Structure formats: structure tokens, C-alpha cells
Length: 442
Image (cartoon, rainbow, N blue to C red):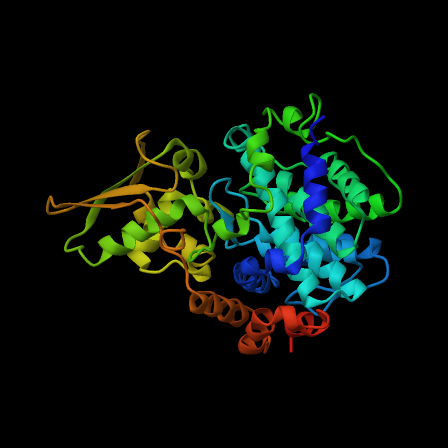
């Protein structure tokens, strides 16, 4: 009888060596650098303060730090909070084939666990790459229907990545690791309808915490069904899709999903980046007042972003605000997606001139922007591959600058250069205590 996907995953997680995985280490460091940038940048957001207030009374022994903050919690609580902060600003990494944001649900529990147990930097890199592999392969197997049905795929698949990474750090046996993945299947949740609200981030935090908890339960002797992921009444079928078995296990251990990761130059939904890029290009050509803007894109673009803007969360998933950032403001950094910018009368007025139109011939992630000026001039710009995509990737220097930007937002005296260096040399670290110390206020 053929192995289940869970068994194959467990074998990969428990038998992969550093030599097998070392070629993926640099991309893993890029993802972790971006993780710290986004987590630090949102660490002082009121949402984090509320989440900390809610969860702190239930924390056990405080073993693990909160990124960008002074507080510490037990590893489950730290995993929950750090995943929320990494995902909060829609600025985290993106696996474009699935639109999973890989790092938040995997790095957060992994670092909390490593800090608690004294795992080495190389242990962390190995576990991170394996966790990303598992969450993204499961995402590949149910995409695109899973997300289209309303499942928030970062949360629903992230829990498997968290369980895989934790199992690796905890050195669970192959059988225990398989059970951890099966237990994770019963803790998977998150809906797209909640994306404009803080509830979205709760499900990402839960993916991190629940995946870690699944590994803890497996270590304690809990078991799970051998085909909890792809079985006839398993996770994939329950979530609405028959799993694509080839996508689950084809080339397992030979190709790596971390190599397909991308990083955002703008703190907004990934499908809006082409809109921003197109508008930034058009801005220098404006010679008269804008009277109308038409943005054309796929059904996904319209479903995600043809919305009114009433809050900072709305602005990050709005076609209309993306246009205002590019055409009017000429930039799209964190400051452009919060008050007072989103309520600026000029920004509001330009958003009102924007109309979205569906073009089924266009790929997800592409956008065509047509601007009509008061003098009758019509300007058009098409962007197929946004800045930050695999075709136009951010450089290491771009990611270092993003880390500096996140630290500047907090103004806590953290040393961006030292933190970046700690990530770039992580495989040499005897533990992650120094790295986590650098990620907290000075």
C-alpha cells in the first residue's frame, strides 16, 4: 500500500539533513529577515496590545519573547502574538502559487520554541525550510478552489507548517511527527470574509499556536489517523477539495517551495501591487487633473479590492486606495495606509474617481490602469509582474531597508544592522537568544 502523504511528510521532516537543505538556507534567511521587519513594524499596533491583554492572564512560565516588545510569554502565547504581528500589516512574504504567507505561522512558533528549548540557529533554519515546504505543498494540493471557497489559506495550511517545524525542533520520531500533522488537521481554520478585520490575524495566530500544540500533544502520546490530510473524510475533502496527490508529494525532497517565496514592497494585499506599480509609472505623465481611473484585472483582484475604505485595514485591500497611493501620494509605505492619510480629503476625492472592471483574460496579480485627464488625454499602463514578484524580486538590500523601516516605525533603538547580521549568520548561532534579544526594544 502506498504511503500516505502524512507518512511521506513525516519521513522528510525527520530524515532531511543540513547538506540536503543548505542550498535553501539563503532564501530562508531572506524570509526570516522579512518576518522580523513586519513583526517589528506592527509590534506597537493597538491590536497587539489588545491581544496581549487578552492572553497574558493565561500564560504559563514566560520563556519566549515578543518581537518588538518588552513582554515575554510562554511559548504558545508568544507564538500566537508574534504570528499576529508578522501578518498584521499585510506586509509579509507570499508564496504566489497559493497566496500563502509562509513565515508568520511557521517562524513565530519555531522561534518561541527554539528560545524555550535552546535550539541552535541551524536547527531553526532546517525546521523553518521544512515547515514552509509542508504548508505550501498542502496549499498547492487544494489551490485555487480552497481559497475561492472562503478558506484563509495562510491560516488553514499554516497550522501544518507550524506542526512540521515544531516536530523537527522537538526531534519527534517519524510516527510522532505524522501524528502531529494529523492533529493539526483538526485545528485548521480561518475565513477570507474576516480579512478586513482583526479576526483575520487571530486565525494566523491560532495556526502558529495550534501547530505547536499539535507537536506537543504528539510528543505526549496523542495519535491521529494516518490519512488525516488526504483521506476520504480528511482535511482536504472537508475543506472542499480533493487533494492533488502529485502536488502533495511529487518531487518531495528534490524541489523546495521556499525557492518560490516573494516579498512585498508595499504593505497591502499582493494583488494590489501591480495597481500601485502602474500608478507610480503613470504619475510622472500627469499633465492635467484626473477625471477618471479605470483599473482592470482578474476576478480575484475585484473580489479582494473593489470596496469602500472606512479604516486602515480596508485601505490595504482596496483598489481605490492603491490608485491614490500611486497617482496622488507617489509612495506606498506603511504611513500611506493609516490615518491621517486615508481620510485626507484629496485622497478620498481621488478614490471616488476610481472604477474597477473585470478582465478574465488577465492573470491574477496583473493590472491595467487607464487614467483619463481633464484635457481628454487617456494614459494607460499595464503591469503583469509587480515589483517583489519572482520576475522582479526584492534584493537583499531591499529587505534590509525594510527591516530598518520597521524599526524606525517603532523608534525603539533597535540596531537594524546587528539584527540583520544575526539573521544572515543564523546557522552559526549556538542558540537564538541573541537574535531574539536584538529583536526587542533597546
